Image: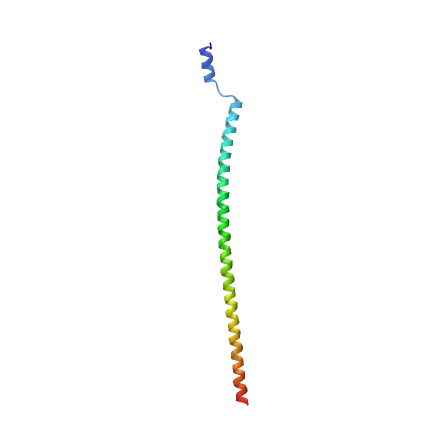
Length: 98
């Protein structure tokens, strides 16, 4: 049979240094686990945002290329119009001089 005084002493004993270190380690480990989980969620979110940005950039590149081609085509039309005007002017001058 155990002595009631012994039970009372063990219930009121202060934790040892090892107990305190172990408790602190376990609490730190829990905090690190929570931080790792949050970091994993942030990484997944960043990955999704990166994919969305790449898709938008691809769309913008296509729009820029289309605009560039349109401008280039317009410039070519302008050059053709200028050459045609010069050709007509030369033909008029030739017919007047003849």
